[in-house]
Image (cartoon, rainbow, N blue to C red; front, side, top):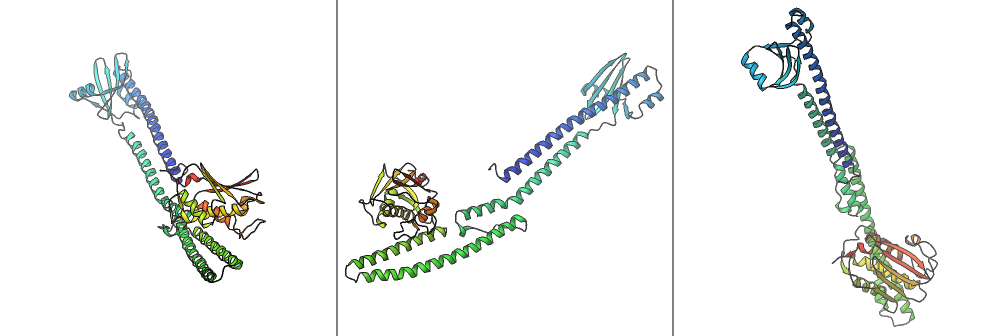
Length: 415
């Protein structure tokens, strides 16, 4: 159980309360026992001393009864067999020797007896006021209080248990699994009301996402149709510089539409549908191919190959965009890719960025060199990396731009 959890806190409070109640009642029992023992000692001392004075003839029987009228609920045991049984089997709680006699307090069979021996004769009395049930009542109350605390704990825990189910649904929402979210409201209390409100909000988000996806896909479909027709028409035209320009325009438009598709896939929560195990060399080769670049523009440094758990289409798009940006904004049309330890670094020699990296990772922002850019490159890269648990970073050293894919270990598959 998480120590910062409310369930942990409630459990700790109830355990603390239970232990406090137990210790409190143990102290109360001990205190009451000592107090009751003092009361009994005072009572038996007064009765025994008065009886000894009565035996010695100092006071009369009437005076004895007068002195002990508040305590003298003592029945004398006269049967010899019973006296012997009590004297031999009973536990002596206290013993006091006096002139010509002996006083004993004896416990036997959950009863207390006062034994007075005077001039060799035994006088045994049974205390009718002794409360054999006194400690049992205190213990019963303690058990009842503990049971009430346990029942309260179970009741509160049961009332708060829907919070765990609600948290699981919120976790699904954070992971983008909108389709798996369920309605976990079970009643009309505040937690159920929050659960119901959360579920209704998810339903609305699903509807908005479906509408947005439908809208974007229709737009992309409508855009791809004339581009495809344009590319087919170009094949019928003789080769010349105008054909090359038109081919470049249509190809660029097709790439942009594919990038829009990647953005739609990420933001719709479907980014990890195709996340599988791939060799990093296959990912790099695919990125170079869709960027239409070869080894004359790119140099890769890597100690050894390894496998990564990524969405192949998205991750290659991110690397392709870094290759495009690196070559486009370099002084020599060359980009170097270093794959070391926990990062991938894209190096190109050129001027430093005019603004911070955060500025360029926003949608539709661009630097001074626009050069057929719509400002989506780094935004797409940053979004793809975030969905993979990675981070885009930037440094500028000795005239070289350094773009990093940090936290590469989070996607590396260990053999």
